[in-house]
Length: 402
Image 1 (cartoon, rainbow, N blue to C red):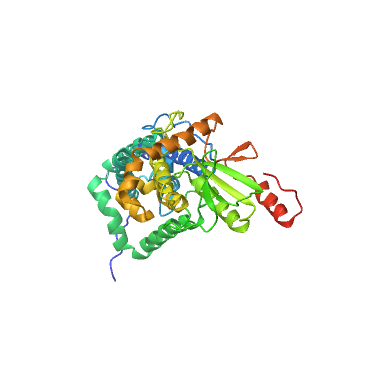
Image 2: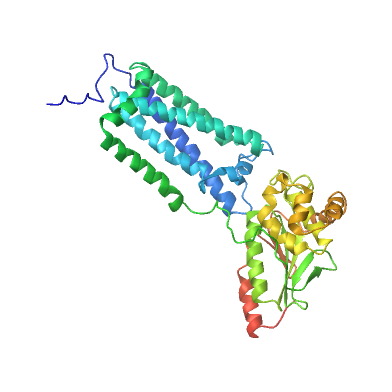
């Protein structure tokens, strides 16, 4: 008869205390609450154009800047949502440790979770400080919680032995491979399912081409300023004050282009710049975007070479990566004369953008996109009545208005 496998939950000579596991469980609940708050901020940042969180204190201390970063997503899902899942898992292990105080396996699993949390905190902290160049107070709080969770698991494993606890999960997998495989498969299934089930509010759409497209509709510059595209004698004119880094502006751009294709003889769209970037927009109390002013300069300088609308498409898909490209590379992408383009970026481009910003400030614009239609300003989404009005005009059931 083969010998019975050793009891994985066998008691060591001394029984560990309960309070370290209680400490870990409490910290997991705190981390869970912080992750829920961070997820809510991420959701509102990507769904409410005028939202500003309580921890948007300055450019360097700003949860909103971090939430807008591409590094706030992992596998297309907000890092905060992964945090919610991780803290729930850690809370289950802590509860297991409290109920089975003599479980060396629980101590080992807890240690690995604490180590993983601490390494994740270090990686996210470095990204925040060195790449995003902004810190999130709520994120910093989770980093502290994670470090304390590691401390709590070390205390829980001290009595049975830290080295023995670290070895135990691997020994358990060898001793009971079926049970271990089932646990790993369950974890993998939950992790794989989260990106599929999670709402796509933080995911960038791929509606716009990376390469610029040549407009086929009439286009030029309005007498009062702003580049227009669309009807020569419009029944409806929409002036948009926009920011190339703003995800809501990107959505509005896509919708307006679709309406232009559907009603080319009725609709005219006028683009004016209102970058939410303090480097050229001194009216902002807090910084929002880092490359928006430069992107607007690029558009204006492309416009001097009759490539404004090609640049407009290009910038809505590339604005966040512009800081990593040289002026020669951008000129090549847009088919521009590189010398004239570089000279414009130092002079004419910023001056033209400043005129649009002044116009926007006179209208007391509070955010982007803002639409000016028949003298009335609307911020956020394109008004729902616009497509209906265009349909009425196209059918002849409504009188034309300028």
